[in-house]
Length: 185
Image (cartoon, rainbow, N blue to C red; front, side, top):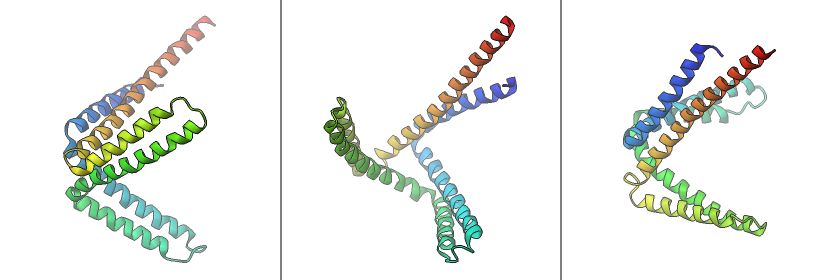
């Protein structure tokens, strides 16, 4: 790998770690940015749906896909134009997601118990904790779920940055071994 590519990869990893820290430290701004990104992705999805329909319109002449694409674009534009509403709605959606996933995990833990998985109780506890955190988040979504969601987004971004840096170290190690092996030949 070229040295300039390694430098860019290292800078990217460091920038992602810094961005993750900023997301954790600024929860409301993170939610606004996430809602803007969600709006952008929804618009792109709508455009892709319409383009997909244009390719298959001879096989499926129904306009359902066009309508779906148009509605996605309208929804995306609403998300982008009313970021504050979506920023307030995201924590509520996140809280409901925690309740559902936590409950399903707790129920699923008994399936693991039935097949004699020794750590089934850890899954049960994590499921209960997630469901309780979701229920608590619904009591005051902006104060509880907003910062939690921003922290999760921040940690995710930090992990991607760390992965970039680990891959860079691995590439450096591989290249140094390769040159050592060539020198020995």
